Amino acid sequence: MRGKNILIGVTGGIAAYKVVEVASRLKKSGANVKVMMTRHATEFVSPRTFHEITGNAVSVEMFGDAANFNVAHIALANFADLILIAPATANFLAKMAHGIADDLLTTTILAFDKEILIAPAMNTKMYENPATQANLEILKARGVKILEPASGNLACGTVGKGRLPEPKEICAEVEKFFADKILSGKKLLVTAGGTVEAIDPVRYIGNRSSGRMGYEIARSAGKAGAQVVLISGKSEVEPPSGLEEFIKIESAIKMREEVLKHFDSVDAVVMSAAVADYRIKNPAAQKIKKSAETLTLELVKNPDILKELGGLKENQILVGFAAETQNILEYANKKLVEKNLDFIVANDVTIEGAGFGVPTNIATIIWRNGDIETFDKMSKAALAEKIVERVADLLNKDKKFFPLTVNH
Ligand code: C5P
Image (cartoon, rainbow, N blue to C red; front, side, top):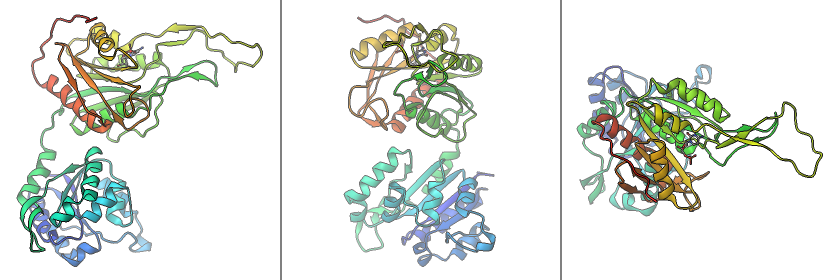
């Protein structure tokens, strides 16, 4: 744990006293530990205790000394490789789930885009309350790791689920986060968003891709320890932090150029970009003026980037997407074969909650041996994790290739 930067957020529950031992153990294991506390947490444990244990100043107030103002929440967010919230109260979970930032801790969380580990601890009824459970679901869907509370005697005199796990177990979870990850040492190329094909300097032909799915895959692969190159067309979302390279392109031709530049150096390619099948044959150099009643645009076929990679591939894993409006499995299987993919993620973009512009997806994965995996509606972040796990499985074991046939 030497050199790892861990920020512990302590919220106002009686279990705060146990977190003194968590901080102490992490410090002893070589980590740099800083603590932030909510005001209520200081009713249970003094900031001085954490200060002495960690050797670092403890942050509580959002607005401290104006003369030395250093935007504490950004500094703390930048410091940490991991934020651990323990104990996490029901109130804190509700605030985090809804993006409320009304103190130093919740504001820091909003400014932090790496791994967050949360250990809730509260009375059983509060824990089981549908409001708390719904908030936990929101956080899980966002990729936050939740450490299940233990069952046993609670401070309020009842027995049930809601105890903070023992400090040793919490520290083991933290160490697990820093341990070798499923994609450590691997390099992934992810494409995302929609390509844009110029008609003239002002207009273009585009598509409805938001870029969300690919950006989540890039984020998830990064969390799994991979170096990630993200090549993106038009997108509505912010790229994840920590990428090896982020390359913005417009046209399919440009995307092909960048993909080919990187192909030799990567272990896997996940091609989730919505690449235009056609481009304008002769884009106008000047803005086309309105005159005739009809205007004809001549289109020519774009290169199929993934198909080209399928022909070039040596050991790389290739993953494609098939966004369809009908005959999903048939079309997807055809693409799997024609593009020589390891698996393809198919979805029916006409179904509500799947496909373009929404944060969820309903996908089916088709494998080379004909196996089919279907997934219920889930967040794109959760689906990204499934895809990344499967890529890691393929990269970490001897690959078996199956003869392919197009099923009609
Ligand atoms: O053939 P179709 O466009 O439906 O195939 C979809 C898959 O192929 C996606 O993974 C997409 O990123 C990729 N693709 C490509 N180059 C194209 C068109 C699609 O790489 N010109």
